Length: 319
Length: 290
Image (spheres, rainbow over the protein chains, first blue to last red):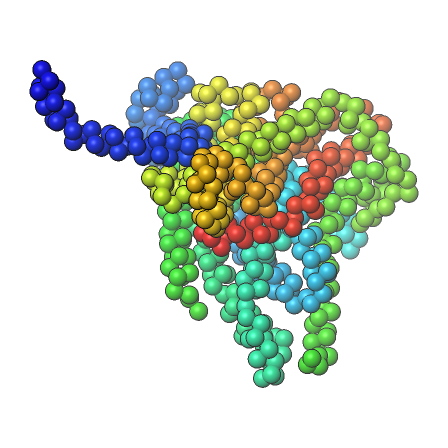
């Protein structure tokens, strides 16, 4: 009997070691694993379960049958989306709003940082910096409200100025010609200061000896900016530009959601706003999920590619 | 000192001028809101005739009115609750998750880190997330305004990287005395990370105070609307004045709108100066390390 027991124990020895090792590891780090439980649970429930839930893009989802019970329909909703005219429009709006924001909004913080860098008076510089970071912390609801009032055709300041010069008031928030401009300007107003921080950090890491040496050679401020300052922050600019390109499908959902209205849907409706209206308000869950999933997948490819390029450039130092 | 040429002096003046213009353009909307909100009704027609109108008399009628109705104080309470409770919970859980992930010898660390970073690159989308919240029966619960955005992967990585910079020797000396990981985290790591934690707390607090989309998605009960959503309803719906239920002849709707904007913004303006010295460090820390 005893022998038999010993033999069985012998047989089980191999898996036992693995299990034992596992238990030893767990108990050795038990407090650390305990700490991880709430955070990891959060990521699983609110990030990974929705990733799994995205399979309803391939199903005929209805609430009664749930995610698992709903019947598969393959690429039906993707086809439906790609073939309908709205898709081209929201894709184009997303892209063009992003590109406008990039063209005007990307250089703005660089210029601000370069200007601030020229200021020798530290109190003045700090004051300007503090003021310029402020709008970053204000919600889009507030900023949308402010801009709506400042741009109002009846009482708004901007139209008052236009009227003062004898022009006709413009209803900016409802004008197809102007609405994208409003989006670009308000997003620059909100983020230009905040986005300049990273360039200011890059500027402060430029070796001051370079400036001293160039002064001895008789270089003026322009030449210093052109030959020392700009090359000094060029790698930062390049990396941020690439990362920004990876986010081209994010045209600014909260901002547009707050500011747009049916009269400008034609020029302002982006993928995210359309998904919200179709899915949450229209309850067409599968179609909205399909379009959302398309955006997630393309966005993922863009971000990963741009990160990969940025990392390679960062390592080798491009200039 | 090398002598400045006249040309350089002119450029310096131009640069100062441009920066002052930028500062004015940044501050103008805030000033406009504050001034209009305290302009007496009789003087309001002057607002639209001037670029910036300074009222002859300061009149707080608009503020009195919005605090007499129930809508704004109720929204304020909800926003305050989600900001205070949300920030504390988010900070606690982010720190608890970041610390083990900063221990290099922890088995499984790499996999978990990858799992968290991956959520920054890919998401299931709006609808599946909504369906998860719905299936958890969080719709029309105040916790729907906190729990779905409890931990930010970005903040988590910043804290983890900060913990990595704290020398191991400190930890080991306490470990010899038999302290467990909770003691190490709360007695050693957190006091050493105070400025960084203040930065992250600011990020979370501002995020909660400013958030409105969770409420739009998950809340139908108007009593649970945070201030931002109340503000949105007042500012952007055709029936804004009906929501407030204010007799508009007492104070013009324009002053009331501006007062509501001011009430929503002032808490941010109040904490801003205290914490702004920390956040430049914080954001740079995050961007440099990863």
